Length: 216
Image (cartoon, rainbow, N blue to C red):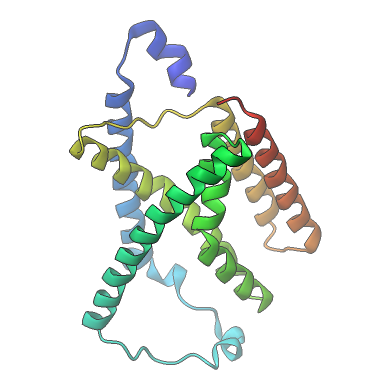
C-alpha cells in the first residue's frame, strides 16, 4: 500500500506485475520454510521434551497408510471446496441483508467461519496446557495464508485471465502490522495469562468495528 501511494502513482508501474513478483518471492519463502522445519532444522520442531512426556501418554502410532491418507486428504479438500462455494453464496446474501461491506465480510466474517476448525483445535490444546502447540497452530495458519494461499491465488488468477494484485488498503496493512506487534509483545516472554487473552480479543473487536464502518 505504501509503495502504491509513493511510487506507482508517480511512475505508472503495473501493480499486477509487482504483485506477481512479490507472490513468487512469498511462495519461494514458503517452500524454504518447509525445508527448514521438515528437513534441515527438524529438531527445533520435534515433540515436547521428556518432562512433558506424560501429556503424550495417550498418543498412538498412525494406523493409516500413506495412500489412504492421501485419498482422504483429496476427498476432504473436495468437500471443503464445495462447502466454501456454499458458504460464499450464503454469506453474500447475509451481507446484503445486514448491510455489511465486502471487506468486512472477507476480513472478519469469512475468516472466522473458514478457520473455525483451527480455532477450536487451538482452544482445545490450550485448555490442555499445551500452549506451544496452540500458538503454533494460530501463528502457522496466518503464515500459511500470507506465504502460500495469497501467492497461489495470484498464480491461479493468471490462468483464469483475471490477474489479481496484492494491493491492500492502509487499514488492512495497519491491522496486520498492529496484530503482529501485539502478538510478538505478548509471546516474547514465553508466558501467558487470561488478561493477555483479553487484550488480543479487545484488539480483534476494535479492528472488526473499524472494518465494519469502513466505507465500501
